[in-house]
Image 1 (cartoon, rainbow, N blue to C red):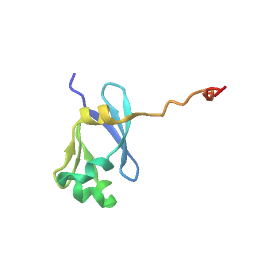
Image 2: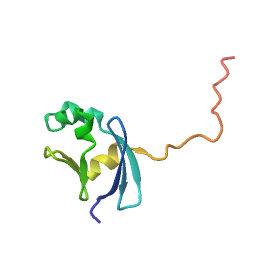
Image 3: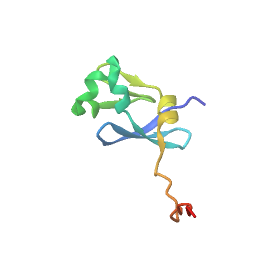
Image 4: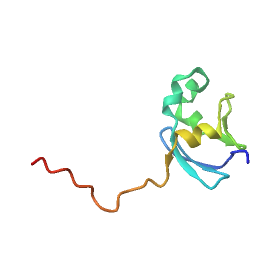
Length: 92
């Protein structure tokens, strides 16, 4: 099965919550990509927020991002939290 983004939600700053056709979802911080020429004009948050979805996420300037990149570089969502605090080792 070819991996596709089925839904995307803007999460603030340069972050997206992506849902995939395999049932997974990832929180992706896109800010590190803004240093590349294709993504540079998306530093303008208004332009960044104007993305489209057609199995991939794309922008009006021609930039797009592969679903595989989003899945591999995103964080699980919701974040997994420890149910109990993890104790620090006793230095003695």
